[in-house]
Amino acid sequence: MATLTDHTIAILATEGVERVELEEPRKALQEAGATVELVGLSTDAFRTFDHLDASGREETPDVAVADADAAKYDGLLLPGGVANPDQLRGDEAAVAFAKAFFQAGKPVAAICHGPWLLVEADVVKGRKVTSFPTLQTDLRNAGATWVDEEVVVDQGLVTSRNPDDIPAFNAKAIEEFAEGRHKGQTRSA
Image 1: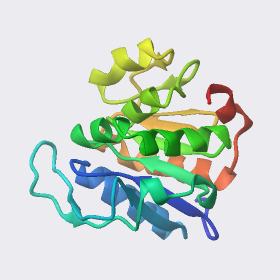
Image 2: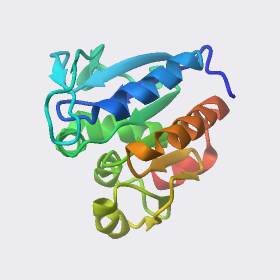
Image 3: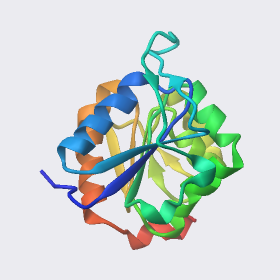
Image 4: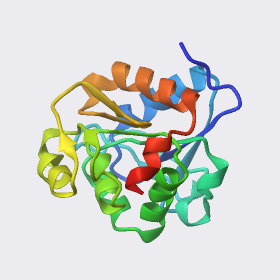
């Protein structure tokens, strides 16, 4: 397995994030040696969700996205949950933060509803992706080729469908983060 020693990975999330899609990738990244920072809409604590149930855990971001510098990070991870990416895509700083990773050719991993933010950032045109099935029309309308597969890797962009895909998602995300910058990542930015 690839190691991420000397890598700092941002996880961008807010209220309504799917608990397991935040916790399990964060744990895998840390076990691979990465420093992981939680970036939120603010530094106020928020609740994670178990599907539509808000009985998850409380998380406190390390930094607000408006104050975060994408240049500090080696990669970006976008967990899902229905409310989480919907709120993020409505925030200009969150959209700009995500887009900055593509402009710099840095790897990005998005699971479940996480790719919604990538639609808003206008970075999926010409890319092969997967997601939670209800996003396929949005992704196709944004110019992506949507497929129903466990995990898809396209030039530094890793996408998966749902929590069942987390083991494959984590493995590919770590691999892409370890590889570093991808020239093909900038073509959509």
